[in-house]
Image (tube, rainbow, N blue to C red; front, side, top):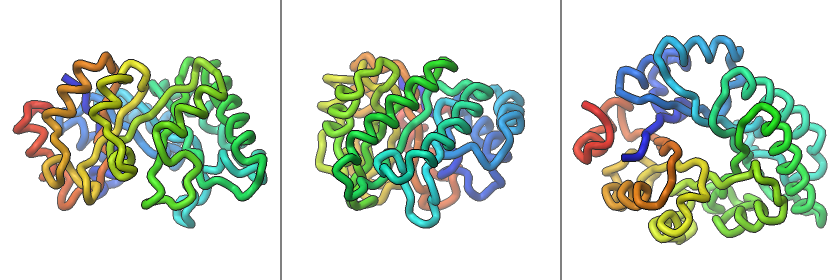
Length: 259
């Protein structure tokens, strides 16, 4: 049975950030992830994890000005210094919080002939730095409907970059929502390559809401994940339609989340 984690940036937003850890534990989660932990000191986040016996499974490298539309900067040669500065902060947090993975959002591909080469160099730099503290770097494809111009829009584009970087500490983060938005078949991919993935995120499609609100067969999906050799966490990264605690019914009916 997959281990479910809650994304505390997108779930339990009815509550202040630190209270979300308590709410996740009360809802029977054992793992949590954050888009960005940097708004709190590492020791503050660790205290929230420890008091709830929670594991922090993933967070992202700093990704620029999120409110202004940034979704990473690794594919933008003019921002190499900003990327390196953000990486230093991420390594500090990873050293203290010990997540299983830190994710690199590539961001939009700059109109520069060197953009892909710089992306590969930045990924290699980040993978090496995180390897020093025992944390895996992941790369996440993001669909071009939600983020036009994203540098890694498909699973294959991310795999091609991973192969080009050729660093054993770079792995794939696989988001079911983004894959389906790009007309990929996540069932077939996970069945064939589950052992090559380091992190999975899920949301229903369309709408990016909780399981049970769209067209995804989650009973089949979790069965495929179980049979694939994947041994990591499956994080709920969706926008709740209503109160967060009211959105777990389908997962409980399927037996994947305790009552």
